[in-house]
Length: 218
Length: 296
Image (cartoon, each protein chain N blue to C red):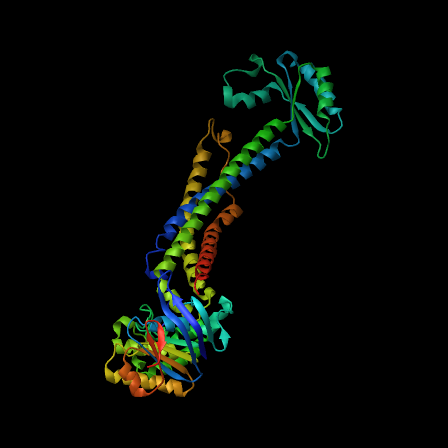
């Protein structure tokens, strides 16, 4: 599913923020990505969801070498990846419905399918009465659920979440983690970045631990 | 109830493109004025051309302006193959020609005027003007044969110069408009960078993102173009009427040519806002695609 071989990453002429990363995430796996703030978790996720290209090394996704693919061929691969951003990155001018519908619209899905799927998913995350609400009028927890719904609406094969429990209380955090586990049980590969190592340890999934841009065995 | 969604990229909510119609409008205004003037000029030239092609004027010097000499020249002309008709203008006709310039107080007979002969050339006839001049000079020395070619040549040269200037104006204002759209689109891309990056990461193709900029550029370009066209139409209409009103000796002797446009010419000018909108759309698309190509 995801393979890194000696991947290094630096921004501009700055120091390497990731060094010699080699890892393999098999299909259907669930991994926590842990490490202190600034350890490189977000950069690693950005490399996986193809927001950045590595400075060196090879990245393979879905058994395809990303360095060999033409830029145009990356769009269909990105559609198989769902991302929950730490800051949600919801579009404030769009309703909750339209925010969740974005990945389907980008993929050119018919409006009838979009209407049915989005409505059903927002019901499932408990926001059936907030379809027309815009993100600024919603609470942090509600926004987070919209962000998660958007990440999973297109049924991605790979789900990445960057500190998805960072802004909610423990009860909500646990509930969201159960949602990710449910997705994983349905076959989605999940990578969940968190600095809360206690939470990661409690669920027992394997961990990828980053320290100063290098993978360490926890 | 789910309301129809708005564009993913909130281009209408930022101020980057708000001024675009105000820049497109003067562009279309200037382009319309320039094109209208070129179209009107072309019409005037065709009018003059139609009036002068196939005609010649033979001018007898005052010393040889007698009726007998004029009659001999007319006979020589009529005997020349390719000449359809030759008519000597009498003094009354010459008086009418001169009336706008010298008035009617002085009789043409009192002036030492050359005698004019109006010559019509048969359609398709290839006249040897040099031979004809020699032939007529033998009848009346000092005779002048004017086939209006020199006048027409100068007229065409003038028209070409004016058209070139008009096209240069259109090209310059169009280039300015294109640059404006490029800068506006780039500003929009910068302002909405986060949204664009989000769509990109979701797997949006460049065309999906570009279409949103295209639609907005088309809307704003058309709106600005329509405004510019309305202002230009008012200006052209006003100038046309003002030109028609400027005359020396009444309506029959207007000083300026008729600059009014006909229906199809107005129709062509009415397409300019659409052209402006389409140009803005294409420019925006190319600008967005070029910028997005730098994303991973």
